Image 1 (cartoon, rainbow, N blue to C red):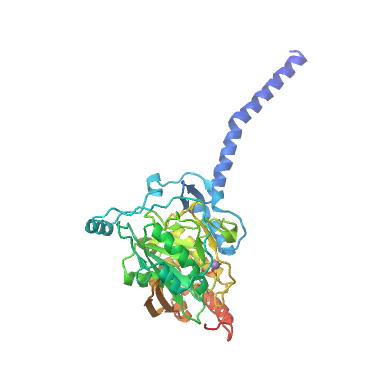
Image 2 (cartoon, rainbow, N blue to C red):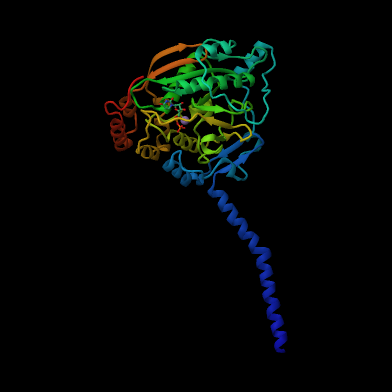
Length: 415
Ligand code: UDP
Ligand code: MN
């Protein structure tokens, strides 16, 4: 064989090899890389106006990060950047509407009225009024509201009864800014709702988890609610089409973005702001942990609870789920403590031993005001901590010391 033929043969063999690599191995390699990336991130599914976020088994590292940064982690992952992939759940389950329960059917039969439909449609966000409105003016503006902050449409049968639970202390201006925005939105949505303001008495450090649990238990003593919307007092919804409705297939996170984070979220598994549970879902996760006094981590703890209970949650899309948070400084009695991370460390281990079934508080007031039912509770930190599991003894002692230091005389005043 001449030198030139041998060269030709070698070259064509090389070309053939390169082609094989390009055609077969390269796509295979790219595919494997892509699926690895997908597995590492939160599995994220989105429909036209609703998302479904499912924490997969590999999320432990992310949730550990969530626990470490707790809220202010910069603008890392947002809802919009989630990986779109398939889920093991059938589509019918992911996007089903709330279940029509026996109770709803009974109401329907008794009423002989059509079910309420929500006439609001996705539209451009409106500019909310940020002017607080006095209690008297509010009562005049909303004469259709019944005592205790209740409203029910008169010409249709609601599919569910909503309890709006607002954890509260010393935020009168925020409350009087939220109500004139929230009430008309819910009326437009044809919702049957009752607003509960759950206030924590001074001087104990603020504990949002206990307030949610107390609100849930106290509301159920007053009415048979199907859906509980846990609502920060300073979150103003910007779109009337953000339907406050629970879903039978998982809790709903109504907030897709907030002005504070340039209308995104600070991290993808953030659950703060406005969150909705059916009665059964809230019971299934045993409500919120009671052990977080001070700012932060109680919502990350809830994320871990949902993950542990294998409960998918749904996040609204940005077409409807935007909020303006009224700007504010950190309240006294609500400063964060470092031990919150150590408390979160035991989050999933103690789900069934810390929450709704162990909430301790005493209800010191209950009044039905024109626009809301006002529930005031006193929370005794020592009593709450005594209920913590034995294996958390050291962590609780440390948290207790940190809280006590922040409560040194003069650091918190009653108002
Ligand atoms: N909150 C309150 N008084 C307080 C602390 C907190 O009413 O002293 C309630 C209020 O509903 C508020 C929510 O707890 O919206 C969350 O607190 P904050 O707004 O400080 O948290 P952020 O999300 O702004 O960090
Ligand atoms: Mn806030």
